[in-house]
Length: 364
Image 1 (cartoon, one colour):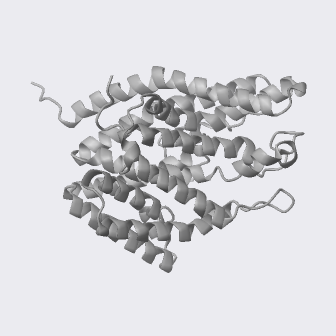
Image 2 (cartoon, helix red, strand yellow; image 1 turned 60 degrees about the horizontal axis):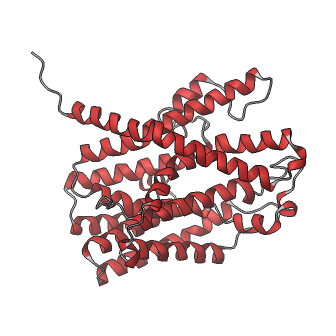
């Protein structure tokens, strides 16, 4: 059975790779002391800990892919159609995972245990909007901060759609975004940072440029624009490296040079998967794996890590690697269940009703 024309199997596979990197960081690469109780990660799993310490770069990889994929999904759509598509894609699964996290916290409280997520109605209601950080609330699902970054990127793309999306307008939009983002960094402007995503603008723009190469073919203008965006990205990557500096005695801090090399290698893979020869791959398993990425990303930390901790408490003789593996397997299986029971039907249902709501029939 052929793939839909808008799906690129290799790009979906890279989404899975990015999600696994983030999960590796949260499970094995974290520098937090006593994260798994009596086990000290640098001593218990020294090689895996050192390698997984760079897994946070999966977030940067997601933003890079998002520039490519969102530009692809925008093409030929109106702003309203794009808004409906993104809302239907993100919210049903997000709401379902929040409810699971709240339910798990309630059961932990009833069992006399300290829940991983504080149970507070005001906080939970704020998190349902997907912008708790903007409302000054803690995150019910710790990884959801990236969704607010994505939402602001969607807003910028929606503004571009209002002007009519063409090749020239997309190029001008990317150049203007980079220029204004650089000005915002120079001015140390919080307003620019919030609206223009100055820290991540280069990643999104690079992804957009790769999609333009995929759709229209590479040319000198796109190579130059992509080159400027990538120089911008790697320069500001130093801020993210500093954010992940490791406390003394907890192993070595990440190297900017290694981070830059890893992220550039991922860029090369995306270039092969989008404009390059891997775009011709027609395998179906990466597409399915890519479909599981969003639910896996949402559940692996807030629901998977408590499973590992429960296994460590129940079976102290299991060691550390087996409970971590079982926690990841649980997250994958839960992701598959959520994809089939919530994500697919919820996406179709919400998209259908929102589309109808945009042009309601007159009632007599």
